[in-house]
Length: 106
Image 1 (tube, rainbow, N blue to C red):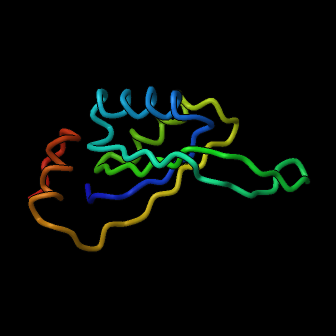
Image 2: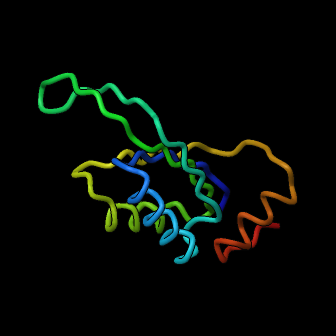
């Protein structure tokens, strides 16, 4: 499977760390970068909401398994799970992502 970058927000750093570690341990993610202090503005239940969240940038070659794991572990009713294709990258890094997810590339 081709590598993708997945964006996912979490309500706080503790939950982001805990779930990020679980994703790497399960080998559904090669790496999870956590960016605390993300300000989110969104509409929920007909109201404009604002929240400080943690944005996770996740690299994987196992998107379906990653999505299932996030849905299982995430505290939000509807978590942000957005997959972006990787069009190019350092070949050695892309290879490492595949190996770390148990699905070698190339």
